[in-house]
Image 1 (cartoon, rainbow, N blue to C red):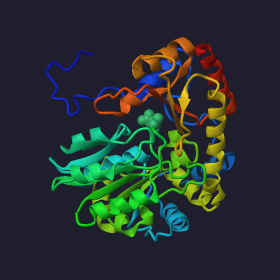
Image 2 (image 1 turned 60 degrees about the vertical axis):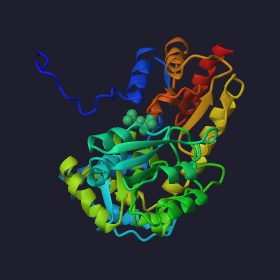
Image 3 (image 1 turned 90 degrees about the horizontal axis):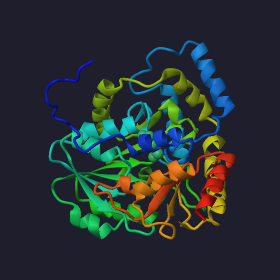
Length: 386
Ligand code: GLN
C-alpha cells in the first residue's frame, strides 16, 4: 500500500530498532552463533511443560483475572517471604504481567508526568528511557563507574532535585553483570529518606548471582520497599523468554495506580501458564539451583575465552559476560560486533548501545545462557582472531 501521505510527528524520534533485534537478525543472516540477544538455547524443564499442557487441557483458556491468577500470586508471596523475609500481600501487592518489559512500561506510565525527572544508570537496559520519554518525563543519565560499574552515590546526591520523581535500579545488571551491595542499598535509603522519590527496581536476574554473593532486593529494605515497584521475570528464571510472563510487586497505593494502566495496556496475562507456574513454584529447588547452574556456565565460558586475546573480568550476576577487545582492534564497538558476526560467525552486543550518547569502551556483551556445545562453537570460531 502507499505510505501515509503526511508527515508524522514521531513520539520517539531517536529510537530505531533495538540492538537485540538488529544483532539477532544479523546472526541469523550469517548463520552466526548468536550470543547477542539474551535468551537460553536449552530446553525448559519437561515437568513445567507437562504442567502447562495439563492446565490448558483442563480448560484454563480464558482471560485470567486482571491482576493475575490468585494461586500464582500466593505462590509468589511465599517465595518473597522465603527469599527476602518480606510479607507481600497477594491480593493487593502483586500483579502478573506479560514479561518484565510490560511491567516496567506500566510502572513508569502509571506515575511519571511531563517534566518529571527519572534517574537512570548507564549503561542502561534499552526500554527505560523511551518509556520515560513517552510519558513526557526527562531521563537523567548517571554513568556507572568503570571498571566494575558501581554507583557513585555522591553524583546521585548532586543530581537529585525537586523534579526527581524516580530512580531506576537494575541488579544484577544488564549489560555489565554488576551487582548492588547491601551498602549501596543503605546509601540509597539515606538519600531518598527525606524525599518522595519512587524506585523502580528491575530484578529480573535475581537468581543469577555468583561466587556466593547475595541478591540485595529492595524488598529486604522496608524503607525502600514502601516506595518501590519491583519487577521480576519467569522467562529469565525458567529459561522461557518466549512465554513473556513476569510480575511486579509494589505497596497497595502504588499498585492501584499500576493496575489502572496495566488493565488498559494488556488487561491480563496468559492463563494456563499462570496456573502451571503456581504449582511449579512450590518446589523451591526450581529456582534455588539456578545460581550454581549459571555459575558453572559462566566459568565454562570464561575457560573457553581465556586463551583468546580478550580482557575478561568475571561477571557477578545475570547471564552476560563483558569482554574487552582493545588488544585486538581499535574499531568502534558496533563495527567490531558486526564484523565478528559477519566474518567470524559469532554475534554479541556492543555495550555502546546501552548509552544515550553511544560511549565506546571496546566492550562487547556475550550471553552465556547456552548449551556447552554452543559456547564451544563460539570459542572455536573466535580462535581465528589469534
Ligand atoms: N533482555 C534481552 C537482552 O538483554 C533482550 C530482550 C529483547 O530483545 N527486547 O538481551
